[in-house]
Length: 141
Image 1 (tube, rainbow, N blue to C red):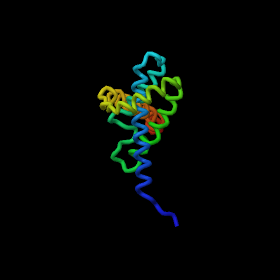
Image 2: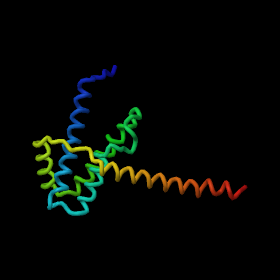
Image 3: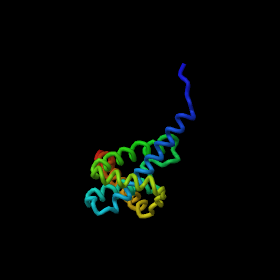
Image 4: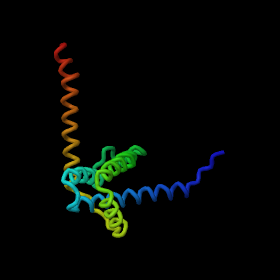
């Protein structure tokens, strides 16, 4: 019989979240470092905009799926971007982030950018759907 140990699993989840927060702070520190290339800073800015923006790909109020995008997209983005940053710089930024324990504010600018991207995506999908289905229906009448 499989026994579910809630406290052990809950502690693992809390450690995972703490690690993600430390890595996001390390990315923020790396984005301010002059040793980081401009295109890496651009990738970091995009990832941080998504991480700090109150607007998510899937809204958090949707049960399970709302947090699933945060548990998949953020670690994947952190993994990809941290592999681009030189190893010594990444370790330095990570240690600074772990020591400082400062919190990063929610970014209204990032929310505007993410909202604008969603708006453009909605327009693009609407135009595509209209061209594929709406116009064909009107032409057949």
